[in-house]
Length: 192
Image (cartoon, rainbow, N blue to C red; front, side):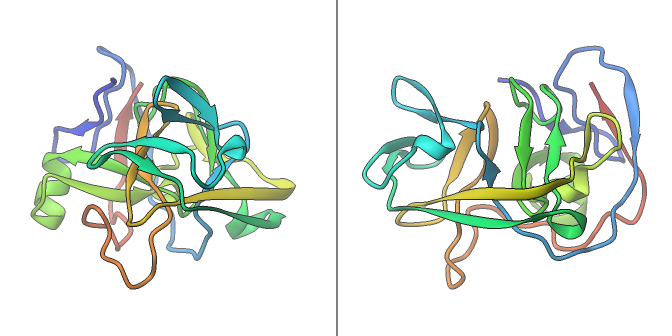
């Protein structure tokens, strides 16, 4: 698995040893959906399965609770522009082994010193829209999108293209990790 540790005063993802740094600009807070787009592969016992092929009763491998049963697949069909435009994440940017398209509000686990200083914890869930750098992570507008969210008995962390990210979280339930709520007030750096 690729390293997604923030190790300096500014967050740095280092998925490829010796990667070249890129500037990340903070993105203004915006409402936005969460979920994966069709084609994203999720880790299941024995391999990977496309999110759109998952059904209630299927098994998915989670980070904290091992194999869990899918209780539901929620789909949201929306216009794919402005705040709803998907975020394209190039392979390797957040530990993903392949390109990934996600909703702007879909959150990934980010670990390390930067999160420790900001939140007093070692890891947090950070929305894709906060990782946009305009190069390896950027908005990918389209006329329409369908976002898929996987529901389990509780909020879980799953592997989508090997990147650690969240499942659907019931409103009343606490997230599986602390959540970075405020936008980053300074540019971040990302190494690829």
